[in-house]
Image (cartoon, rainbow, N blue to C red; front, side, top):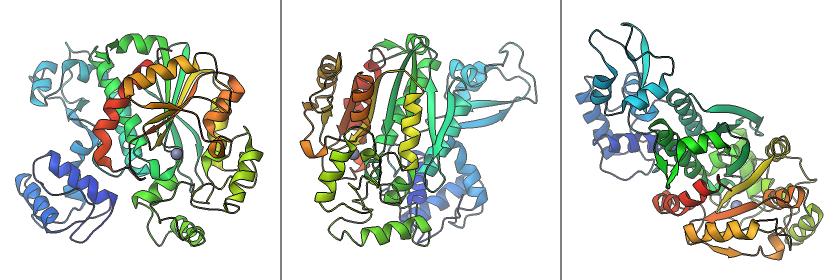
Length: 424
Ligand SMILES: [Zn+2]
């Protein structure tokens, strides 16, 4: 982890502020700016943890903070320990400890062995969600919920892995994806928080939205691709900084489109291709429409590319989808609180019925896609090619990127969709 100090800036400072706030050391805004309030919060944390009180977040301070970022500790078993005692000490449950350590015999704890003890939660919902944070959170979930499976389905232009998580072992396959558009990154923590809560519910044998998590696990294989466009997300969230190739390339592209705010208006991958205009469902129509609108070269948004399926992120999504037999897909976007469920005039069997249910749970309206944005999207191709229900859901309301302060409402609105989508 980078060393943070007074005047440091960026998404890692947000994560620091969020963690200190959760621990009660910080009451200020989560703004990614390491000012005096953050400085004195770090000092308070250091004092109460017996660290050198210098207000600098170096290796020792990061080490002390990590359990609260990771959501678990690695604990060495001592004489007299029982899972019940440990679960009380760390405010967790025996079920959660047993889930994290499936080979552990609770009646025969071996002194000196290490176990994973979950503490608190993993996925923060009050910070800019970068690809680095995604990597950290996935590592945590892997340790806390070892029943999850992880796949890497491809790499972004900048070489970041495109990771898919699989929950469940049922015959029926369902697929949720998010953040194909860079400035719509709030959809990543939406899927990640849902995944965490689903796992937590499974570990403790509870219901989620009235449905048994164990039953979901047995009957469904849910695949989640939480961040299709990591390079673009890192640009918008400020992880990609000015001296990097990715940033400079994007900046150069954006200079040709001065009316689109930079980087907040950025949707594309870091080569200026709109990943959701790359699919072989009316790609030529999309090309004609978008070229006529002036997007005839790499752009912050709306450039379809020089051919369909040329961007590695879209190709990975396409190949992964072809390799499966998904009953239903949902692809998350922002904004507008609407649900799209057709490709042109084509509605797959059950598409309308499920969309109506989703609309009821979320309060979102069902709409037809405007003609000019009705081609070459992932959902368009999925419906056209498989004739199965596919949905684009536009969460949140306002200007992209939707502020993370909308997260709680967005989660509430979409929980019913995310659970019942697995039942269809
Ligand atoms: Zn979008």
